[in-house]
Image (tube, rainbow, N blue to C red; front, top):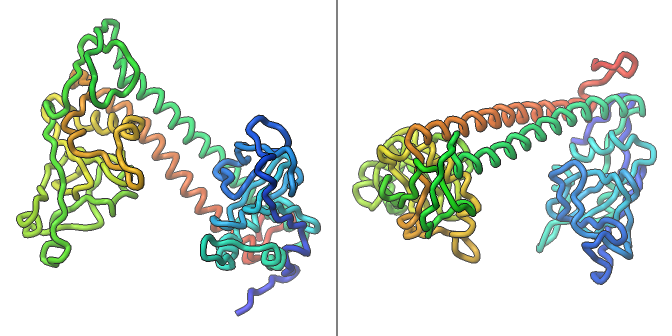
Length: 413
């Protein structure tokens, strides 16, 4: 069924309503990092920010995107959209689009909305891409100029809220990084310090001293290290049982503090016939392969695959302190991981690992401070998800003409 055109709207090829400039990579000898020439953007432009990050310049540009051009990724990932505030040079991974008979801000929103359709057009064996003809022949629905401007204004206002919320999250994350650096190396309110003992494995920062009430300990002296295991995949009776089993299938869910439910479960028979063990509630599970550094607490008795190193904390080590410490130690894990394709931290490292050990009450206070800022970040992140969902719904309604805007009074009809 063909797309219905709302009353007063028209469907026109992109090339009829906008100028489409397909990128072309200049000679490699013209690239530089010294700021000579125009900023150069290829298909790997950082589209995550609202103005592309300049990493390279070109002294002899071939294809130039004018000021305020819409940059559109024509090679995988096809359909990413951004705007360049300044004139720039574009490589063959991008196109630059400038509206002629259409509002530039409306066109920007419409291209974002059309991303999935552009991706369906993309072809290629090595990487998917769309060519200039496909870009120019792509049909877009457009209303009158006043309606375009009103729709763009509504969607842009939502974008501004999204941008502000993202900035708030970024500031909170920066605050947490700095706060954890201070708390995990200097503690809370200390005025007396002592020399740092020799730290052979897992040093978290360049430092010469620690609070006088702290100790540097081998972690296995204050926590029991447990590895995981996978029951035989060939025995159906081992799977789908009463025990939650943390594995790499759960990677997307390891950003929470506590995990209560896993993608896969195992039976008592599976546990009995493998090296897997049921570990107690509160165990700290650390992902040591693939997504190295993910860390979570058990909300109930669970087991894990061999991809995890697990610590059952004793009386001197608070599990939430260890959780936040491990999450902050990503720079350490990057240093300790081995392997060219899939990074892994091997179990002997976890046996030799040394950690700073404040008194237990201070550990709890540090964990509580980290919990509070995490809760703020989570709250803002949930808000961001809601706003983005609202934006998607508005785009679906406004850019298809399902809901019409009142250009005279400024509302929606």
